[in-house]
Image (tube, rainbow, N blue to C red):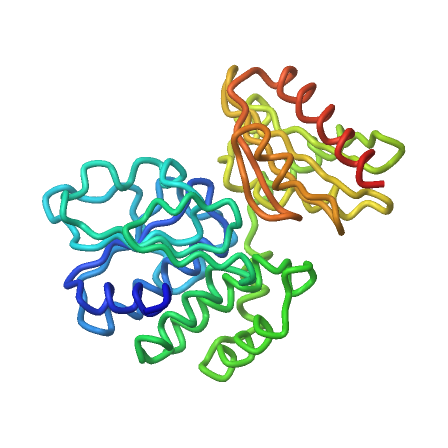
Length: 323
């Protein structure tokens, strides 16, 4: 039995399923979780949607997002934990801690560095997104793709392919997206929801961040920083900064973009984006993180200045060796 079939069989046998994804979630994580929860609930299972961090503002329009919870209740344990879009167990933010010893963990992911932490692992690096994989999973289980499920899966694929602009956009991802539109996903509404309804405070923070945008390595590396002080002054959470990295990434000539997000005096989240053959997953891996060739991240347990010095030196070296 292949891995997809094994995951489908385990879900079919489970009376209750907690669906979980990674900390600092984006559209693929949230959309995939919500789609799975809605579809499995329609099949008569007790389900719950969980993420240790809140959904970013641009995802608040997705069907079912209001029921997303940040902790799994201990008084009503789940028989199965479906972990989506998550390369290793610590990235769940502790949501699987305290689970029943006989609970089945299903690991469904498309990151090449996945650690195979589940009881059943379906890892497919060639997939554009977890959303694409969840679509195939629901088809394998012969579950209907209702409009709310289709909307969440379309948002997941749209996000992880950068609006079908990134290198992971494949003929299969486009076919799945088309089938989701046929099933009831509304492309204009979903795309508009991802970028509209933003808080003016986000743009004030963005203007301050972009004022400090720096380009190095002969124009090949660009980076920004979001300090804790600036974020607190703006009165917004870290989740609103998810797409800030697109600005340095879109500069002419830039091959590698970095966003430094200060969490505290000794913790910095680093987002990495690249073009072409510049493999930022390798760069993130050097600092204990991971991701895809052109989109990855890591956390540096050090101050902002030290984090910048380490990561930028490695980024410039990577660009130098890839031409």
